[in-house]
Amino acid sequence: MTQTILLADDSTTIQRLVAQTFDGGDYTVVSVSNGEAALRKFEEVRPSIVLADIYMPGKNGYEVCSFVKEHPVLGKTPVVLLVGAFEEFDAAEAERVSADGRINKPFEPQELLEMVFGMTADAGGVHIEESDEDILGLRDLFPELDLDGGRGNLSGEEIDAIADRVIQRLSVEVIEGIAWEVVPEIADRAVNDELKKRNED
Image (cartoon, rainbow, N blue to C red):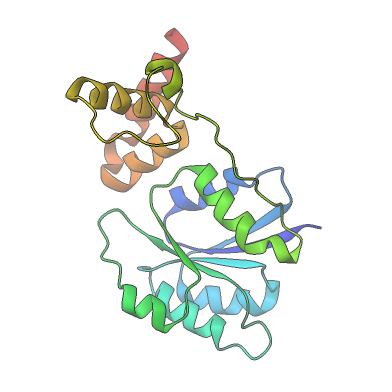
């Protein structure tokens, strides 16, 4: 069964990233750019989950969340607050309006997928199995590293190697999102340079 995600964020980059993340799946993304539009769309589309930016024109994400949670019919709809890299998150306010979660921007698509799937599973969403998959390939990089039990002391060289591996595994979508959020005027160049470099490898 197809479910609806209501996304309220004035960033066209975030709107595009979320739409791409759920493209071709069991979710339809409805995007709006301000809080007032989110309130109108909420009752119209009756979403399975709401993603709301804490800072946007008109009503902010906290206010959108408060509206959702106080709704007499749809008050159990999960709300996830989106927090920009340089935005101050008010944990007390988030708790007051009964937000179900938060996610920091820019985010990896898989992180968002898992959060949405987990919160909408009872409504027919996809269940995510826990996995011990070595996503970064650290077992190959450090065969002696105890990934399951943890290891307290890493050398500077090991930390640098892990950081390099993380950068290598960053998705193009996240690189693009960081560029647009932090330095918009160089976003196109950053993405194109990264794609060119990866194609040459």
